[in-house]
Image (cartoon, rainbow, N blue to C red; front, side, top):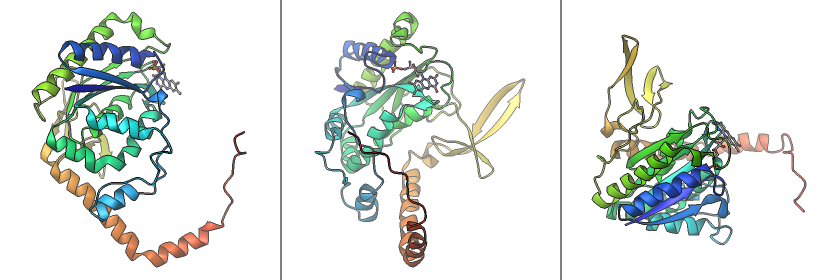
Length: 304
Ligand SMILES: Cc1cc2nc3c(=O)[nH]c(=O)nc-3n(C[C@H](O)[C@H](O)[C@H](O)COP(=O)(O)O)c2cc1C
């Protein structure tokens, strides 16, 4: 069983240090381990042509990408993703969320959605996450990092463990945090055990504060007058007693984003949007023609 560690932070920075402790733990628990530093990879950002979506969701074929595989090094990344049985993602917080490098890789991953799904149907993949932040300005880091990680498991909520280390702004600062290093090693053991045992949805062993029992996140979002878990897209109700807030969930996993129901709702939404666009072709052409020559976008000087 192979665990792929992905570091999205600085070279030998806090993410990488914790990730390597976690990989040592995974190795000690019986898995093969390998590491990717996203800073070593050139990955072009998705240009939004939607060829991947159209080829699969609309035409029902295999997902493809319009960016040629020779244009960057993303294919090497996804080959390792496809081959891994489990993942540990370690990423720094940038601007309250996970750094963009991670999302450049994830956005482009649409091109292997079909292959990834086939692989995950053969044998489930599992993920664990390590977030690091300079202070406690890390509010959106873990939900987005966890989303990125579980997308590598083909949208299965196979999050095994997560940890967040705050107040480590300087490179290597986390080396001083013995408790964090030990916890990272434990996280590595935990993901390795899950990968070996293949427990399915019942895989989570994390110990952080949580509000949602499905994604183990801490967020609530107001949408259409209801409170939802923004990661799982299920409705909850908040009550308070003795100064303690409790959320009771009206819906469970079967209505969540991760279920067959959630997946169908999402795909139906995409198909409906494309069908509406096709029906409105004349209007789209007219609006586009009207706006095409309004304002000339600022062009930067070519790079030397
Ligand atoms: C562009 C940038 C934005 C950052 N934004 C935040 C932030 O919003 N909140 C925070 O707590 N730390 C922030 N940080 C600090 C990093 O999260 C912190 O230094 C982290 O330890 C870096 O991890 P690394 O050593 O693995 O690269 C930011 C750092 C950079 C470079």
